[in-house]
Structures are given as C-alpha cells and as structure tokens.
Amino acid sequence: MKIYNSVLLGCLLTSSTAVWADTSEQRIEQLEKKIAKLEKQDTEDQKKISSLTPDIKIGGAVRVNYNYSDSNKDRGGDLDFSLFRLDLNGTIGDIRLSAEYRWYTYMDVVHHAYAAYQFNENWEGQIGVTKVPFGNLDYNSNSFFFSDAFYAGLEDDYDAGLKFIGKFDNHDIRLAYFLNDEAGGSGTNARYSFDVVGLTDLDENGAIIDPFAAPTVGLSESNTINLRYTYTFDNDVVKTEVGGSFLTGELEGATDSLGDRTAYAVHLKSNMNNFTLMLQYTDYDYDLDNGDDFVTVGAYAYNDSMPTSATIYNINLAYSYDVDFGAFDNLTFYNDYTVMTDKSGNFKEDTQMNVFGVGVTAGPIFGWVDYVAGTNQPFNNGTLVGDSTEWEHQLNIQIGYYF
Image (cartoon, rainbow, N blue to C red; front, side):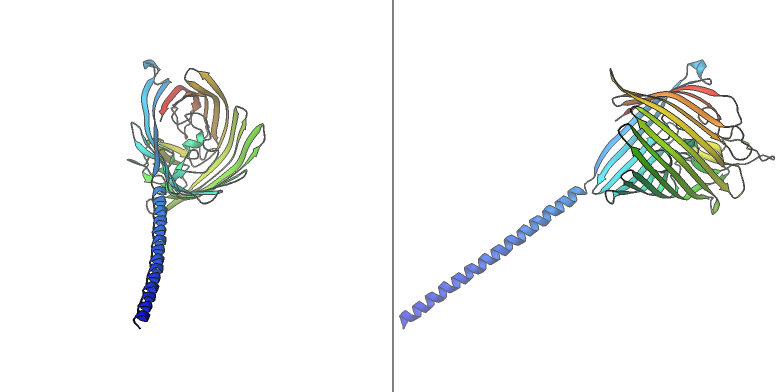
C-alpha cells in the first residue's frame, strides 16, 4: 500500500511539474509576443514622430540697386540698398511649407506664406498667401521691371486663399479661390504685389486731382475666382505652352460691395534651344458702382491710379548663354516690350515700356542690367493714367547675393 501511494504521489508530482512547465512556457511566449508588439508599436510611433519633425531650410537674399536717369544724372546716379529677404522652405510630415518675408528701407512685407499638400500624383492643394494663377508663369517678363500687367495686379500677384494645381501629362490646370488680397503691413500700400486699395477725389470737371494721392475711400479685392489652363506641345526642337486665364471677383468697401472685376488673358511661352519667346494678350474691366473711370492701386509703399478697363499686350524675347568666364555661369539677354492701350474714360495716351537687358549669374550672385524706355510708366517717372507723349529713359542695375 505504501509503495502504491508513493508511486501515485510521484505520478502526480511529475504531471504537475509538466503542466506547470507547459503553462510557464505559454506565459513566456505570450509575454514575448506582447513585448514584440510593444516594440513594434514604439518603432512605428518613433517613425511617426520622426516624420512630423520639421525639416526646414533657411535661405534668402541681399540686394543693392544702382540707377542712372535724368533726375539723378547730375550726381552720377544713385546707389541704394534694395532689400533683405528671408526664405523658409521645407516639410512637416506630408505637408510642404513655403514662406518669404522681405525688408526694404521703406517697408517690410510678406511675399508669400502657404502650406501645400500633395493629394496624389496629379493634384496639389495650397492654402495661405500664394501666387495668383494668371497669365504666363512664373513671370510674364524677363527684366527687373516686369510688364504693364504687374502694375495692374495681373502678374506675379499674391493673394490669400486656396489653390489647386493639377498636372496631367501635357495639361496644366489651376483653380483658385481668394478670400481677399494679401493686405498691407504698416499701410494699405505696404505690400509686394499691386492690388486695388481705394478711390480718390475728383475735381469739379471729374478729372483726377493727384494720381499718386492716398485713397479717400477704401477698396479691396475679395471673393476672387481664378481659372487657368495650359497645354504644352513638346518635341525634340521646340517646347511651347499655350493657354488661357480668367478671373472674376468683387471690390469691397468698408461695409459692402462697391463693384466687381473681371480679367482674362491668352498666353504663350515657347522655348527653342536657347531662345525663349513670351506673348500675352490681357483684357481687364473693373465695374465700379459709382461709375469712376479709374481706381487707386498700391504696392511698395506707393500709390498710383489705374484705368478701370484696358488692354495689355506684351512680347518678350530672351537668349540664354552659358559661359565659363571667371565666376560667371550664364548670361541671359532679353528684350521685353509691353503696352497698355484702349483705356477707360479720357485716358487716351498709351502706357508703354521697352526693356533691353541682360541677366547675369555668377554662382550665388544674380543681377539684372536693364536699359528702360517708357512713357506713362510707373517707376519710370510716369503713371498708368498719364497723358504724356514723352519717353523717359533710365539705366538700372540690381545685384543680389542669394543664400
């Protein structure tokens, strides 16, 4: 009997030990799986945190300007500091960020500031102060002085809103809604790109008293819709982009709408070997409730008056030539011609500008050397509503170091 009990006890102990061992191994295996799962989750969390770490690159530019014209030739021209600018570009996760701030001697302004998201291989969305999709892009000119469209707020313009860019093979589609313009800094005209800023007083004959006066009635661009489409023809010799642009929006006063505006353009940009040809036809109309034939526009801490409707033509030809001469890398010779005609009201004289110049690249240094001839041209001793038939001339050299 004792032997039987001993054998039974031994069997029970052996069985219990085996069960305990199996259970322990299962628990250890479960713990190892949990630890592996936690480690995997931690790795994924670290990747997410790493992907959300800002990757921002800082750049900028410092530029100076020399100008020689009839107004300053007796003192040998003027050499002035032009601007210091700071650029921020990078990503946070899947979001692309871009911003630029500029300091001039007379103002400091936001050039642009937006966030972008790439929805798929075809579509990107941007929100913030971003470039208005209108006309030839990125610029409708080669020179430092842009074209007449720039002074009408229809070239290199930036406003605050939402934009979508779609690229499908040779098709380029851009749709945008801008709630308002980029707004001024210290004043309504302290901004980079030209916008409508108001209305000014007339004399008893309905004529402009001072085309450069500050507006007596505030006015701003709002609720603007932009559509732009281009198609690119491309072969081994010539690459040509042809398209059209359209915009429509409101002109807001302090409390309500004071009018609306529309503009459209047909444009072409063609590259053949080292040559680039740009053509653009632009027509705009600002329909004011009070029937005025002009509005006040502002930028660069400067006011000018602009016809409420006009047609703008421009033709630009450039030749790019790579060089290996000292520090110089490239010389781009160009001639830009632009004219604003068919103006509203009694503004009979055209605004014209011809710029013959060269863009010079030497490593991080870039400059424009421009000989400018124009009549009724802003920044060339004129105004868009001028009645002069005299041509003004100037030599302008803008040089910048980009980092």
